Image (cartoon, rainbow, N blue to C red):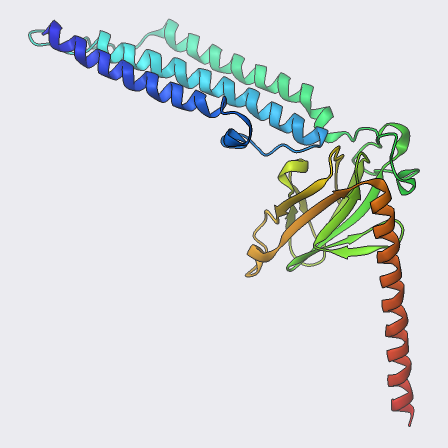
Length: 288
């Protein structure tokens, strides 16, 4: 019987080792091959990086707990299994063991809580804009429930969600839909609101998601240190067209941002002029 037990034990040990190595392999895949397989997307924004780090810490603690539980489980299955001519031991309880794992679980929760609070300020508090921050970023403030960034310099953009698109209002009267354009290395503070139902702003590579609620303003921030395009999706079911409510943030160099803003302002002013002309024409026709 012992000869048969050894191959079985070896087989189970091999399966457990294979599963463990496979799971661990996801975290060691090089470059893009293993990017965001089991962890959040993390882009060039400090808050997104901190969210990713915190997630990994909690994940590794969880994997350690699972590995420990599995080790004791398989040890118990083989150590206390029934054999021919001998019944398996019947254990009704063990007060010391039960108190031990209860205390261990409480300690793990306490450790995770402390680590989370250590990371929380870096996730929720805006950082300072870089030295190349655009002029519009000066003297703009994050307000109410979000502290201002160091130096009180940020580009504050009003984000309005409505079925099924996002509208962006810039401090210099420029307006855009669906795509937000921001300068690199500038702290961007967002004031979110909704015009109809609850929506949820989420660009994974630029930080956590935040709800846009009718009649209430929420605030978040990001600071992209690299140029590029980062895409996201409304993360709150908001109606039949929810699937189409995507979002995009394009990060450009400060000079390109200034040019884009000027173009948007010209288009906005031209639209207003055309609207006024059309209104005058309609009023003239009605007066005849």
